[in-house]
Image 1 (cartoon, rainbow, N blue to C red):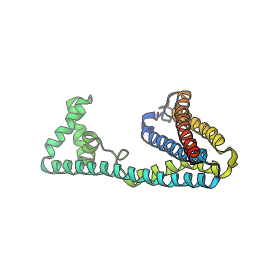
Image 2 (image 1 turned 90 degrees about the vertical axis):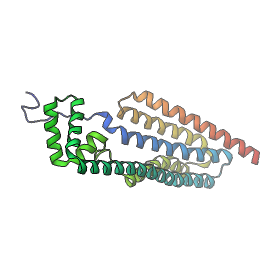
Image 3 (image 1 turned 180 degrees about the vertical axis):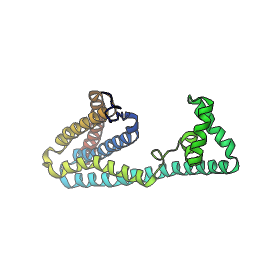
Image 4 (image 1 turned 120 degrees about the vertical axis):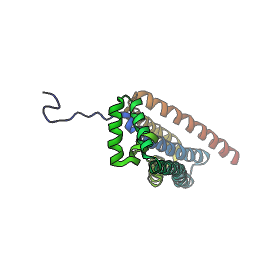
Length: 237
C-alpha cells in the first residue's frame, strides 16, 4: 500500500534546511569553548592558584558572549536594513506598474521550468493573494524563514557562546588546582571531539572527520596558549 493510499504523507527534511542554524550554533559554541579555554589554559600554565584562573574564565565567558551578541546584532541589522530597502523598492514598483511586475514574476517561473501559460496563471494567482510576498520570495529571495531578525540572532549567538564557554569554567570550579592544566586540556578535547562528531553527523558528513578536525585545532590552540602562559609565568617568576 502506498503512502498516499493509506492516508500518510512522506516528507523528507533536507539537511540544507538545518545548515544556517547548525552552522551558527556549532561555530559559536566552539568559539566559546576555544576562547575561554585559551584564557584558562594560559593563566593556569602561568600560576597554580584557582581564583585567577576562574576569574579569567568567567571574564572570557561574559566578554565573549556580549561581543558575539553585539557583533551579530549589528551584522543582522545591516542585513535587515538592506531587506527593508529592497521590499520598499519592490512595493513602489508594484504600485507604479503592477502589470509589468506580474509579467516579471511570470518570467521568473518560466526560467524555472513552467510553460508560459501556466507561469502567467501562477503569477496572476500569487499576485492576487499577496503580490509583495510573491516578489519578495521569488524575485528578491526573502522569505519568512530567511528574513533577518537581529535580536533573535544576537540572543542565539550569546547563548551558544555561553554554552561552549561554560564547560571550562565549570571544570576550573570543580577540578583540583594541582591538575588543572592537564585535566582541563583532556576534558576539553573530549568535549570538542563530541561536538565535532555531532556537527558532522547532523550535517550529513562523517562524524569521525568532524570530530578529528575540531579536536585537532582545539589541541593546537591549547598547546599554543599553554606555552605562552608557561613562558610568561617563568619570566614573571
